[in-house]
Length: 115
Image (cartoon, rainbow, N blue to C red; front, side, top):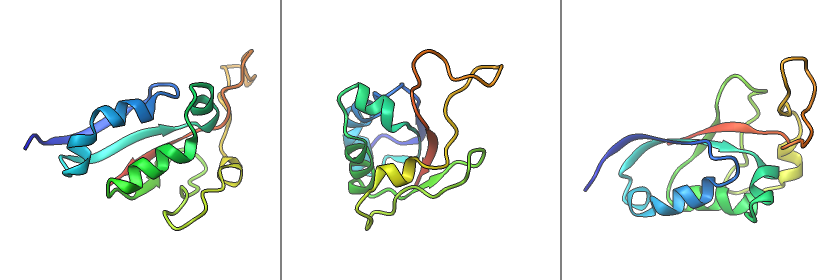
């Protein structure tokens, strides 16, 4: 079996596709830690239901935690109904150096650490 200490993906809404490509490793716990950007609006813009990303991660045996540096809200627990509107509350939208949201607001996001 191959072994990867950490797999990081910050692919602007393509995270599920990246992780699906590594499913063999994930399913056999060949990856110790996942670091995944979770940005519901970016996922939806790429045709991905944000809940599908969380389900995929949880279904492969991982548990996720919010990476410190944001509002430290815990991600949806596997037993939740995955109310993404509720989860989206409290995270800071992407902003430019002047504190303005750029032309297209990609929405709120966080980074998940999954073990």
